[in-house]
Image (cartoon, rainbow, N blue to C red; front, side, top):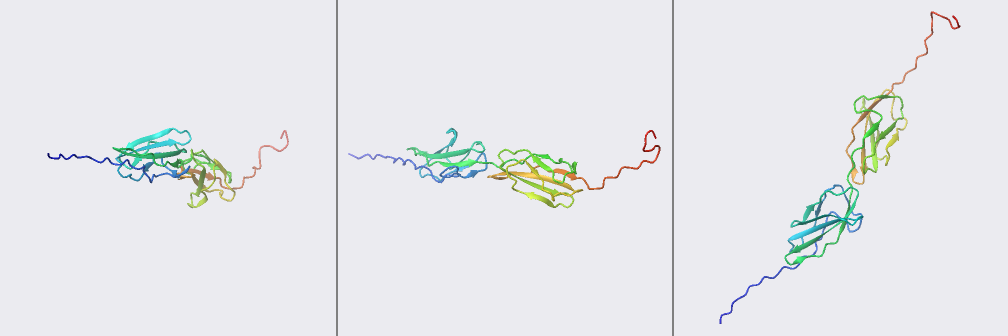
Length: 231
């Protein structure tokens, strides 16, 4: 008789777990990520046709993001500022699914918003007049900030008379003596910062320092009358 040939297909091997996960580090807290919607990427796994990403909130253990894709990157849905995450990826094809990759960690820390200024001054130049050469500068807390910078400029000369990027985590400052001068107009603004970097600059406030002068003596009365009663 005549032999009839039979065909067959060799099934592909189950792919290996992906490597090269980014962003992430092998131990917490991992690198700082400065966006709430980071892009996760990894190296292709030979023979893989699909990848599945899973991300967990480390403190709660809750799965916060999962997605399957044929690509080697995905963009997260919105995460939460200040939270530590761990994520991992598995690879699959027609033969099955790999074990998950080694998990990697990162912490989301976004740059804070500029602080809102309170006093002294107003947003319109030249602003109110004050008589204290060591006024208290006050601003509102910026969420997530751990430090503030304050900058005061002489309006007439455009000279930066106070420039401090590292005030610390405070919301007021007494201006040191010798910085401001009587009769001058000033503008000031601020930035907030944390480990992710500095915010943009706040809206500028303006104020004027009262000019010095001699207080006039009381007038001398002439008439009518005298200094004794009934006059």
